[in-house]
Every structure is written in C-alpha cells, then in structure tokens.
Length: 105
Image 1: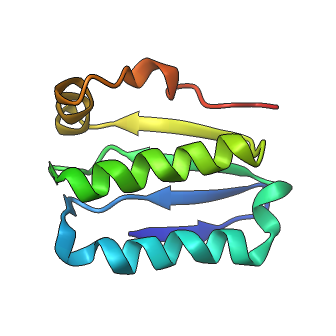
Image 2 (image 1 turned 90 degrees about the vertical axis):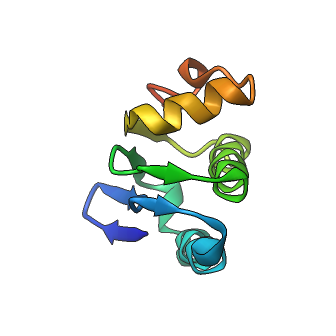
C-alpha cells in the first residue's frame, strides 16, 4: 500500500495483492493517516484500480477504513475500482456504488 501526503489530498493506493499476509502492514499505514491529524483538512482519495487479488481480510479493512472516514466526517473519494474489487463487493452483497463518489461533507 502506498500513502501519499499531498498539499490538498491524501492518496491511498492499494496494491495488486490485497491478501492476509500484508494486511497488518497496510492497516498500520492507514492508522498513520489518522495519527497525523491532517486527514481532517484534506480529501482522502482511495485508489483500488491496481487490485488484482483481494481476500476477506482486505475487504473488511477497506470497509472499516471507509466507515471510519464517514464517521469522522472526512471528505473522501473512491477514485477507481478494479474489476476484481467489484466482484468481491458483489460476492458479499455490498453495493459498491454507495462508496463511489465518496463523501464531501
């Protein structure tokens, strides 16, 4: 996972392989966003376009991350989603369109 702190936004780019062996490291990366406090003043842009494999742990991590952003009333945008991510959301019966476009306060 890559987190880029830019002037007006924080880009969160999920990797090609979103599987259990790297979930702890990715979770810690996401926590650094909240620890910095800068997320409240910036747009958080979530990029899922490169994801080729995703398991249940990462699915839960993504949902938890987005739910936390919503609960904190943070502006966010889901930039793009790979076909594989779309399939996993459908498999679990979660409507991806409620996350697309994000939240703008």
